[in-house]
Image 1 (cartoon, rainbow, N blue to C red):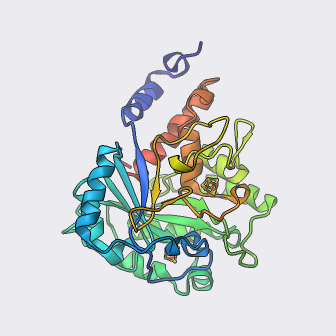
Image 2: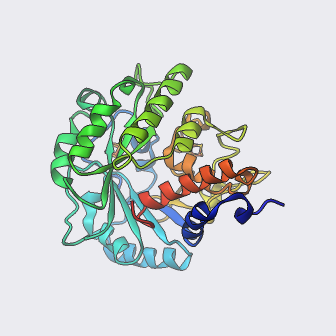
Length: 332
Ligand code: SF4
Ligand code: SF4
């Protein structure tokens, strides 16, 4: 049987050891059903997830809930919404109890005196024109002022088909703001005309993402294997989709055979009672899903399948490192 130490040389083995200690157990929390934007293609609003339950308003109920989540073994809280910064008391309840990551559109600044080292991921949906079309405003001009030079912030750049050939300008703007960037692909849940991926566009954007990583390694947090997986929707000859997805809420998971999955993962609604199907839109057709976190988790939970060759295992290590950097388990 092939072992990790037989496949990796000393340097790769050290990298493997650093991540194999982490034992990450994440879950996802809708902090609120409200947002200060209404983006076309927002998976949360387009799937009606904001209507599933009335959000809990009592911060003490949030605190007790988070304590129970901690007892359940969660060691990474991923806060989404709605817009979490509309309720900083809830964000603080998480931050005081658990390693916490906060997704935001960046319009309201997370005050660093209150949250000195909380990792913040700012959503960005393309250039000024795309942002105005899809989100109603150019959010970058606001968010980059709010977070310029912040060491615990990165842009989560959702690339659309209209961005092909234009990503370098965005990445340079992010670099010039002293921030990092991670890339994922739009799933176009509301079918906005011209924003659905064609196969040839996915091949083009894969090449472009690879080129950006080569050209801006200090700014782009990514891996070429992740680019391959997310653009092809395939890993080691297996197709991504419902039968393979690792990010399904454990209570919804009756799949047989059971794929490798995130242990005890739950995505909670802001009522603290309702659970959503998965880490993203519960009405999305899994065949069209381009969710970045689901794809990287897919690689991470399938270590054994990556032990056929040294190259496969190195690919796995790089994706795991990328995830660990994005959630502040290891430095950039
Ligand atoms: S900022 Fe985020 S939560 Fe708000 S509408 Fe846009 S995608 Fe949805
Ligand atoms: S929509 Fe995506 S993340 Fe959700 S279950 Fe389907 S494949 Fe997984």
